[in-house]
Image (cartoon, rainbow, N blue to C red; front, side, top):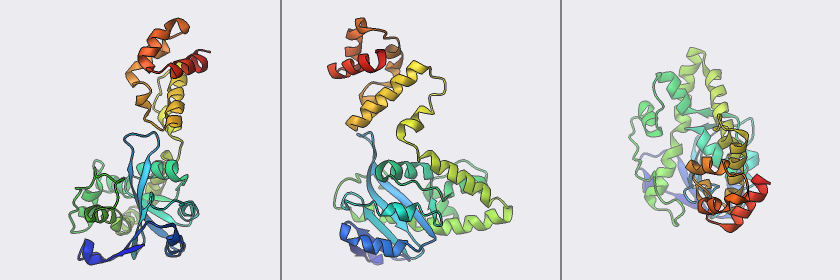
Length: 284
């Protein structure tokens, strides 16, 4: 565990920051988090070449501290499930669905007691969805730099810019929540936002194939069957579904009815084993 001195990241930073990358620091994390009633969370991950997201960094803020948990350096993070799923703990996010999707698929953690500052701000300002930096600037005289948005989060060691970016992404969440909460209470709309936040978080708590299938509202049964077959293969290989076949090829595949179309299948799937599986599992 490394204590990152405030001056190393931001002179006016009020919270103590810890970079944790060893399993032996598990007790420290538990001690710091287990009695907290409000936590703020963000994640940094890579999801460009795999079916499942690779969680790189989990940022958790309390009122006084920020934990930057290296999810590649630490090999056992199962203890976090009890802490983060505690229904007595309110978890603050910006755009909850993305983070809950990553936490569920990578760590099996389902967070349901949620407040989403993006949903709250859209309601309060009666405007379009705002990014995190814009919301921070609304409530604090701070302009965040987003230079590390597309950074390589799998590379080690982290750069100082990456660590500052990661800490910034959770440092202001609790403060924003408190300010938004006051506004919402006056409007008698706090429960409305909590319900909307919970719904958004739960959308990320489904298996990936379930959430993706929901988008195929007009698809027929065979198309859904092929779609789920692609999801299964992609999950087994841990590659993006588009690497099995492209969405635009779905119409060609759903029109294949027998082994007589094997040449067309080979053109689309480019793999004899996949062709055999398609014929066996889809055509029957």
